[in-house]
Length: 212
Image 1 (tube, rainbow, N blue to C red):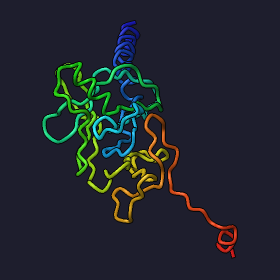
Image 2: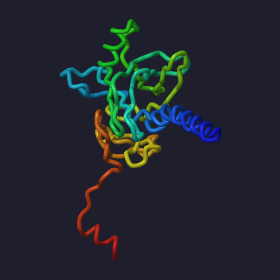
Image 3: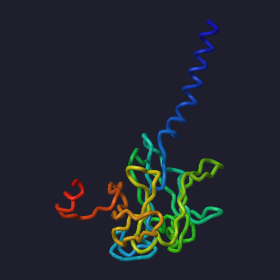
Image 4: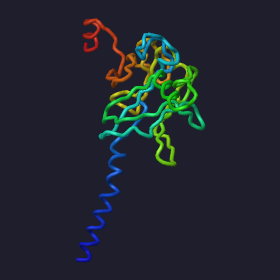
């Protein structure tokens, strides 16, 4: 009887500790795509703005929905300067985009200096943090160089290989020296980018010659 009682306590403790682990382990929040140098009206307000039309997109790479409360965006190195605080729930596989105009509104509403996302065109670091009580931890970050941040070039993860970053450069094609490599794809703020490689039109004759 004593053994059964001890085993029951063990199962209860495992169940209690497993619940939060499942929630945290099943959801994996990450930076998915961003654009630092807008040359068009990305936020759709009818006005081109180098500040308001910047954007950063996050993605839930896990298998369960995640509560976004406590997650924040920052840029630069050192002590984080908060640019945006998330709220709501993000489903598994879903994305959430934050425009510079959203960042500016959040900063103003929460008493922070109003700069927007403030992504430096000469290169910068974007970081996603999670604040839980007294703990502040980096969840994901990405440091980019100038070549990847020219007019309307977005940088993001390949949808088929999330660990690999590419430049979505259909609006402003990269040269061979672009790091990360250009993909020939268009940026897609607010939706998962299904384009993975550049496409090149070929004649039927050139295609047949491959198999001769």
